[in-house]
Length: 391
Image (cartoon, rainbow, N blue to C red; front, side, top):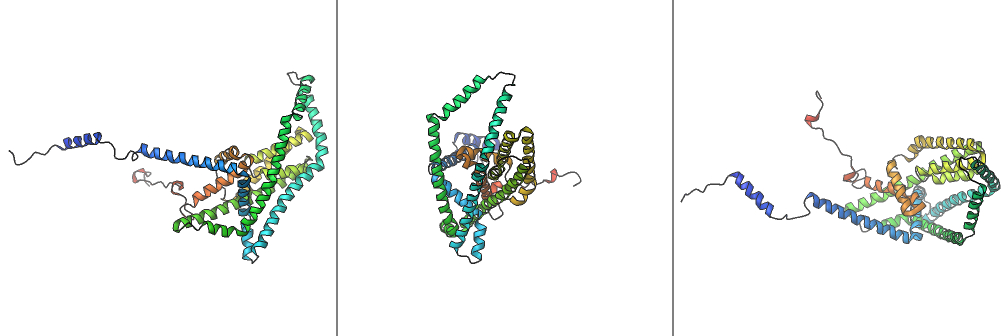
């Protein structure tokens, strides 16, 4: 018997190890790439389910949720004014009453201006609309395909039957219910806004109690960023919308388009819907000019709207909004579509500021000027072999 045992070749040892590992099942099925993908997929599914649940609950309690969100936005917009009055020694209750009365007066003034202008020019617009409708019928007679008077009378009779039908009546009742809900929500929003303006800092400190250390610092960064983004968005958009409304109003008066004041107010309101709002306002103004003054005047109105929007988009908005709304147009359109599908008109109005707040939170997640790790720009490292010859 030999005293020295011959060692197996390295290739034999490696082959035996590979065979043993192939027969042994993996110790952790979630450790490979497919397992990590599965974990991420489950996490995404859970987040989607939670988001759907939150949206469902908010829609069920929309009478409370909508005034709460609107009051929060108004409170953020007027936070600098409240802070300035507090620093000057104005009592919190008095500062709140002054700010709240200012908001109520502004909203009431816009509503009264629209109602007054429409009522003042309604007879003129109605007669011009009738004349325009007759011109439209006369133009329809010149089309290549025939539309006889019997078909027109049949369409008008069908419209009359719908107006006098039970379906139209139920729709009118639903409209009355919607008005009652709107009034209830408006009163509730004013009440909630009063407490947000008066006791907002105390409420925020109460919410900060469960957090400690880095979590508290992150929560405070998120709160400060939310207030800044919402406030800057509302104040900047309102200023831009006011300039747009005044500019378009001047053009409408020069072109002698009726309902210039309501159209200008409508331009102001639709300016809070990015990209889409300006287009809708221009279409409505052009339609009124088309009915009242003819196609040439409508083309001038379209040109005026395009000119004002270009001046606002290229000069005024970058100065007033600054870096607050750093969102790509594609992201804005997707947010508008999602907000409209979820919350209707109100969802359209709130989609962009909520998206801006979410992106602002990502930008301060790891520090005052340090975004979350996945959102940081990638720094490219140039290897020595990748440099240009002679560099």
